[in-house]
Image (cartoon, rainbow, N blue to C red; front, side, top):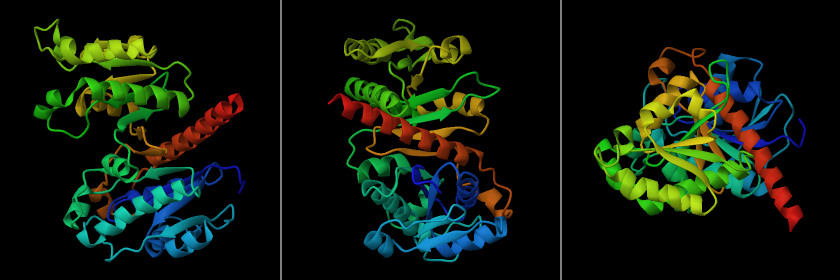
Length: 354
């Protein structure tokens, strides 16, 4: 395997769900394009690999050996697994809180691997928040945990999908608020936060997506974007002023637009990203358009992180191996690799100018 391949840490997620299966399948299929490093229980992954495809070859390494010697070399038809042992036997489809802390450890190991320069980016398979909370650890989600562990004051959730026969160009939708009850959304939309969100989107589209002058469209919060205050004043008092302020900084930001009409090709063809005000306003559209090929990307972190756009699918896992679709995981890995290449090119260009 060529040494110039991007090294991608892949956390396999909730062991009772489809995460380990789709991680194995995607890593094995893409091993000529990236060097995948699986992070999970090595023994369980070896057993699962044998059931999925007897050609899959894994090489386990302990966390202690990794920290002492760094990432070992690996043959082109072998995948390295950083071992994060589970506390309890896995029964597909059945959650077990005893394994919650081990799932969380995979995230810590991936962060460390990037910070130490062993890996270039991380891709996360879905996990079950309740299992980690039931294990006694307060946990609200990947995005929030990664921000906390990297001391990042604000991050932005963005989902994206590649161009396809259904979509003539990539679609990217970022969120001003994420996992909040709907009644709390208006109070959570604040001028300073919205301005920082736009800055994060602008910067990451430049550095990690290679878009020199990103164009960002912003939805309103209310129907018809408030209709000049008759259907709500958040647009007048918060959203539109933040947009104008962002434009004064040189960002190409437009809006606010009514969300029910913005998501049409005649408008989207001019946008590099749409910033929606809340979760279902933007993601319902993207998940319908992406046909299971969407990718979750966390913007604003000091590292590259992508993920699938679906959950643990416990019911599917319970039916047995070989049924899960790894398409979203494969796209997540490819997009992470592309982001690594663009970020490296951007940094090299900046270094050459200094």
